[in-house]
Image: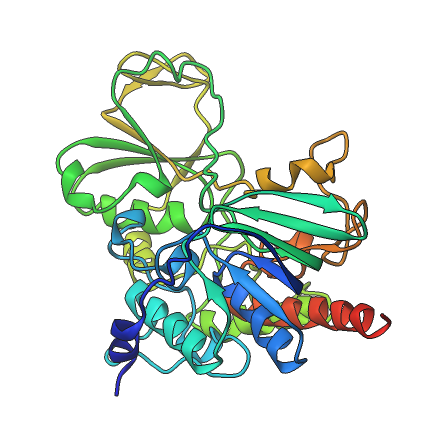
Length: 372
């Protein structure tokens, strides 16, 4: 039976509101790849845990809400190099890189296969101190835990810079999260902003039906060759093991030369210009004073961690960041953060990296639980 069969059996566990406070060893907030990887290692260690997921279906970012990301989205690496611990991702027939549907099916079956205690949909509003424990307040009740792992990711907090003239532009402005498919921009002029993989991939497909201008704050870096799956895997592994990536064939921040990007390069589309100075009513203005008309600006400018639920713990420093030791919060040692990028563990926001960082986080948690 294929992954799609198992995904069809998944049904959200709609918990009713419970006024009693439930007690567990570990509460995990977020049921995406990072949260599931933590759950796997906690189950393996026989720790009493719960995973609270705000989505209505398995997979976090990759769940079945297809109106949340663009139609052509694929993983940057092959299934072989995109697995969570305990079960390799099967290959998707006829696809070099897995589609979003395949990843969603894999994560749904991963939950079932490892019998992970996921409750959904549960919206967590806050985490607060309660004596020597932490309390997680959710839409269906409250859980008291000795340790809390926050793995809510970044997709719910798209970042658009406050660039001069944004309020003047009369065309369409959208972020990566708003983009679906290129056909709606056919014949229009689209300015794509950003130097990462999303910008390059969306520029590539938009350029086939629309006029495009690519602008970046820093020169984009391209991964060399067609070995991106292995390179990404090796780079993430080296980072997770504390090694250097200098001199490697690619960095996790480089643009991967997937087929659509290679085709765009061959067509001469991948020519980035420095960031424009401001937006105007009808387009953009460059630093030399010249202007260019545009129908839309697509901001592929990244995301910020979704951490509002942690505010009652006051874990932030003066710059609004949460200081961590590995992925343990320095201001609240029973709080762990996972899946937000390199600052919470090497490549922790990738499928492969989530497994490495989850194992390290759970080792520390289990050591503390064992100490009583």
